[in-house]
Image (tube, rainbow, N blue to C red; front, top):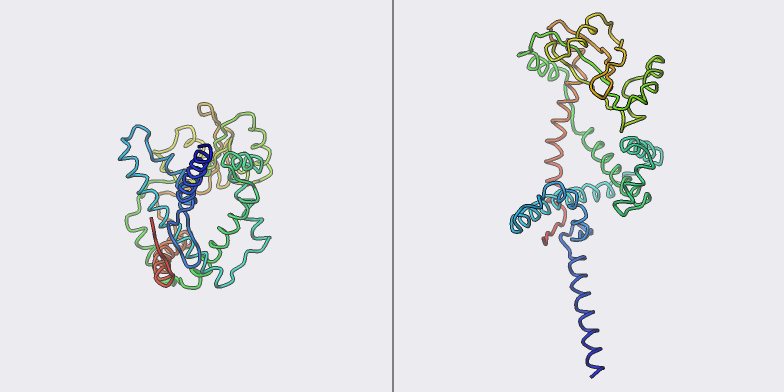
Length: 304
């Protein structure tokens, strides 16, 4: 009797462990030689579940939304894999110097390496795993940039035509192009004022304390500005800045980049911004076509 009981226990342990393995390791897609699993897909989808799934939703509605999220994430993941395989095919490489620069940008963005490590610990990931994933991301970014840069050209005549379209309905209201530092903690004000006196850029100052200092670059019409700020701006020279202005619990430092009297900017002033806008527009269109063509040439099988 004991032998039969043990046999049943072993059977159920084996049976349920197989069910669990099937759920965890279920293949949702194959892209070339790469296998994409349900376990990985669920990990990718988790932040979106937290963002979009309301706990008060009926179970069937929640499942419908989860299925939709999984489908969209899988589609982007497949595109990502297609680009990765193509980058490897062309032997695109990322140097240590390129990676270190890219890594430093990410570290500054999250507020320092210690903060990054804590966030990774919460997610159950190591710094080495994060760096490996980041290097893969940089590889794809570099490859896409190489592909796009070689395929898109914007003639000067086209830029001038785009400029004319932009200024056709130009609003003649006086404008002020400003950089603004929003210092949320008065204790770090001295760390703002000293670098400003030395001529340091506002954006660089904000990167030292991303959790305490916010940076904004924007163009405002006169009627959109605070009366005190507008009064100061009218007496300021280009490149100068206001003293810290108390606004609620925060302090604002406002730098005047440029003021205009209602006339549209000259072509030369807008050229770089126009080029960037047109380039990004063309790049997006080209990438959509290119990825579609790549997907047509790769073996892709979806099981989800």
